[in-house]
Length: 587
Image (cartoon, rainbow, N blue to C red; front, side, top):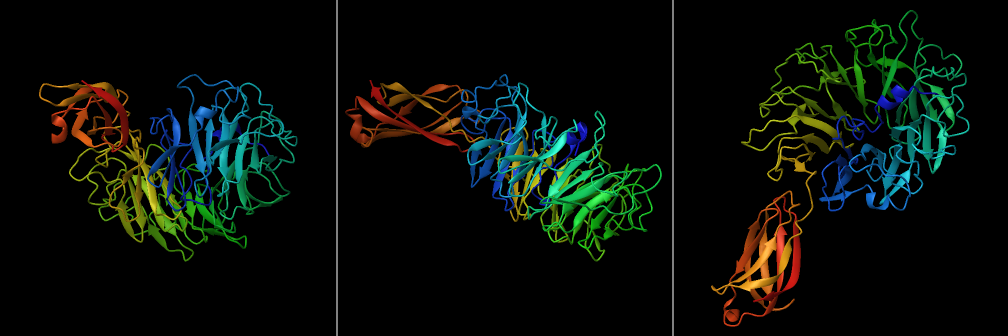
């Protein structure tokens, strides 16, 4: 089954766990993956956040701690492979498993010993402190330059990984076109073969859709005729084990319009599928632009975006966008330009939910909604993610939907239970507007991850973009892209006895300390566990060395010891602390 190279590179992975999917590949270097319960967040960041992590690292934030995931220090000499020039290596976060313990990245750096193809890009599974090469197969010769592979998606548990390969990986791939592969239990298999492939350079297009939450149902769309009776246009297929089933079994349109389909989501058991198509599947659909449909377990189809005008344009250009489906298949989330609620008083696109009764709810609104016509220059108009039950929807918008949002910068909101909450709220009294970008929503809807250059907490000391986590019920967001490298201060070998009777000890704050100044307290003791001689506080700018004068305690003023044990606890502006100690001579 062949895929078009461009389609394979640009396809966005979508899974049944709607709140878990990454809105990517990363639109910028800012993206994130989050566990279903919101306890673990994975994100790429170019600044070094932990000691020795290096730049362009992927981090995990869990239980208040930050950990670098990419094993750069173990991926150079041991592999014997060529390494990219300094600053030219780039990791891309693709997706995480439902518990975020399996992290999938694409990089041109060899992270595993079996990756010896030079500077070619490969896909890896980072789990348990080690990297496993995914983009390989029986015919992968690991030649210099490497095979071109593109990540497509995973099963929720991370046990099955899907990727497009631009060179054959298995012996049954004989069509000369890029193909969709599955990697599971260390084996690579071709997902499905086109029984009558066209000769290159004409290749049928196949786009990975997703895997149901139960892990058994694989969904993909293809323009290839993979079964008898499949003619013209694209279709959505379901594969369970070795059984392939065409789901879009409605009659395809005659005339100049070719049927196009976009898989969006599936219920947990895979029996209900949400998708969009430009084909009028039901009689009430009278246009050739995209409309949103559900395929029910009995094989019938229902128009979800009922009453819409289909948007502007013909033959698939314009219309409605399917976004997410509840785990039980009941509630669907979609985007449309039609007014399906009395609260919708503008003509621009909006987010809606629809249940099986046909009831609509306007999602992209709030108590301060001015109903302003707004169209984004970049599709989609409403970047959004939904929780597993589709009852909580996170989205970003320039519109001010609540009174607390007093600027026109993009903000992140959550709509749940008929109420709209501003998530990317700044510090009270501080006016520093900056666009916020939605990155991830946990499957249970309890946590939202977003990026913004606006400092939202006192410890965000710069105007660079940072990543924040906002938990359900929390009034403030937590900065998770916080540098966690404590200042490595230096204590001089000798201390000076001043005329005043004080003991001066030189301390230095490292020039590399980006979150200075170094502050803290210096303590002198008579031996490692001896009595305290004296102590003094200090505050030192990065790259500076100062003498810290210490007034000896009364018992040591008459006879200052010739040596002492100095212990300094240095803290930076972010609260990172480290204790350094050494024996010093005094005199």
